[in-house]
Length: 296
Image (cartoon, rainbow, N blue to C red; front, side):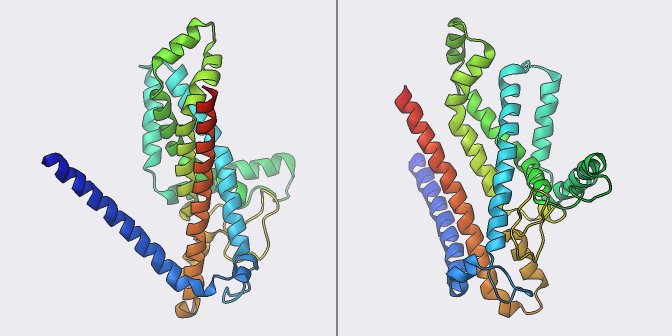
């Protein structure tokens, strides 16, 4: 009897969550459908943002998430592999690293933005300019590269934790069989552990994409711009981003009612882009899992 009660309660909670999500998406789609045209999606913005489109913001968001993913997944996977496969189990250093990762996941996003400004732009970027470009300002300024690396640090704990959980789920007997066949530790990790943990690794990547695509605070100081009617062509270019664009329109517009349809349409596009990126990663994960099952 008690088991049925908890099953019914869990099902009710799931239904409430689904209904709330559907209500939010329906509200956004209803009020934003008016401006959601092909020209709105493919045109550049015009001064004042009362007309034009949001294509530079869509492109900037996609490019930003792509660079962030390329940066965070290798670093997060290598960190998790070292902690789980190479580091001594009771090492004090390993405990400190895990504590640092746990603390990093709880740091407010705005702190990452200030860190990106101080470290990536003022220290790394200006140091590169002084070493390679003389007095010319190239990397010592807000840019999409620094914004993506800042987001990579923000989402790093997500990838590390998901990958480490996937590595722990692999039975030790698989590792012992690989060693008994003469494999080195590197060969065991490459041929046995990582292929079985690919699902968890991609799950961490999906969660990182979901969080990185909607963050605004870390890119406030590191590269995002409100009005740039052109696409970023180099890593040291500034860029438009959908989340920051929504924030500015919602807080700085002189006529909120006039920009409300544009605001709702932009929110709808951001959600759609996030879903597309997530579904693409889920599709890639399912394909890889299917290939691994067929290979067995």
